[in-house]
Image 1: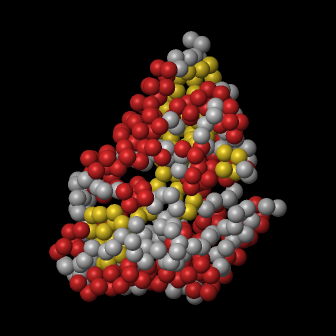
Image 2: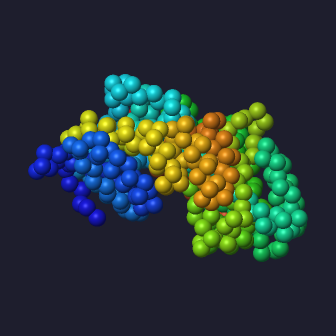
Image 3: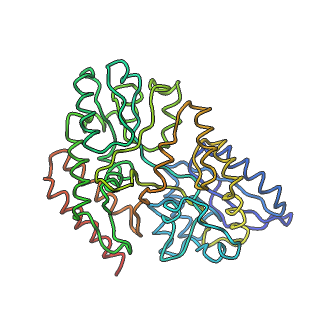
Length: 413
């Protein structure tokens, strides 16, 4: 692993830019695009640094605060606000205007995640929504009808109860890590119920509002029921492993698991599941998911911000994002890449992933503020405590509302 050092001009007169990511499965796609960028910009060398996800944020925080961050790097919605608020990354607002970048060509709900105090700090790259995966083999073997994809929460629960009566005792109707993670858990139910986590200016927590309380009630009732894998089993084995081994009929999860679950060497489920949208909780609400996505940002310490933006601009073109999708099999934020993603996933995995894409238009942007990590933990800690019968439902709501609001108040002092 390269050490974080200040960017510089090389002895041959070329400008060197460092680009840091955390996922090695994207390496081939990014290296291909780097080759294309360097061919068009022979005066610039891009040095790709792949850091393990477990080490990425610790290294990045140290480098960013120490003035030695890479010129361009990945950021996510949980940490972005802290980096923008502390002036560790550059606003791209002037660059976007100068280069006539049409931000409407990108999925708006993902772009919004990286808008801080009215200015855009990143052009979004790949994204993820939350869906329900259902084991078709188990449905056929035990005479369980395929559900209607345009369903509501009550219809899903009735379907799960019917499945429970037909499945073997060692197979649960539903699994998820919704008690541990907001992105693939409660945030989706809040969206489906027409609720919100924060108000628009991110100064008030909205956990104790009627719609959000309803979302909590629906999800936690499911988590505590015999329709869902037990808390202990979910923690011990993990819902992905449970679903992989056909010990759960349905799995609420992020679309980033498509490739892993489609790999016959990794999953017994491979070839035997379909993608369904999550159900509506409040009739008239179109949102079926929260959406999160990665953004490319420029370090505030970069000595070559103009060249860094040229690289981001290149990576954000329709052509580059199509190439990225074809090589990494991940959806990119440019709206015109949709057909390529659907086609390549069908060809490579046999999956019809249109349901995952169709729900992006009305998706709720991943809720975030400056200290998202802190209040996100408040949410999951209280859900886990309630599911384990350590606190009451009312205490979960009250503790969460109070804990999130206290963090927001400190942000806005």
